[in-house]
Length: 331
Image (cartoon, rainbow, N blue to C red; front, side, top):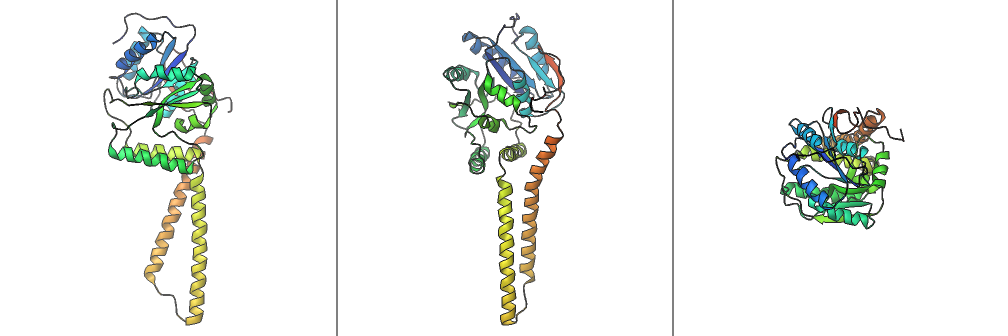
């Protein structure tokens, strides 16, 4: 439901709520009403920043109607689909509040949890991460893959991810400023939030069912997201394949010496066409996998050195008309 009267813009903002949006026209009005009820009960100044990541439905039309009726709604529409990470970054670039909450538009992240997040922030926490207590809304395969990812990531990365922690977080203004300093194009906010440090706490919650539609995260997209996360924060795969290469080279030298000694002592030639083919195919597979790992890192370098904007803006609501992400002070 769209509000009948337009509240005036607050002179100072205590809380900014960032909502990445992709084909969420059915959920946005409900999300707005629930957020408004929660935040106005707290008697604090707030703003809502929905970032439309090139939706193909009426999502931005809904954002425009909400912004026309309530100047606290400040919308951004990308020129095309740039991905959720870019949408979250665009919201962080436009935060005016002393704290910022990032949450999904599908209402799996309950707005009613925000008061508890604010309590922990006011108690001194710079980052409050909402942690899922269960994954009943996910399929068994997705639950298993999530658990495997967190365990594997913990074993290879210097950055510890919070198991069950997603993008539903509260950031203090200092954390927002720190995140906005980071210039990389390929972003992994779960890792960046831990990399910047600061005082962090967790808050358990039970995710709700989606208000409308289905998840756009296919297994292929989740796999790509996991690879991006690992490549962003660890070079262990490169070290692993370097070690495997060294061990295979050592094994081949030992095996070659054994064959020479056996031939000299016993006068036997080297039999085994089958074994030769198996060894050749095995080593070829190892080489292709190692080239793939190296290619992931080279591809990341290629993307970064082009220095393209993280996103391009098509339209805005209650915000200055801009084209791209603001330049980082580190560029």
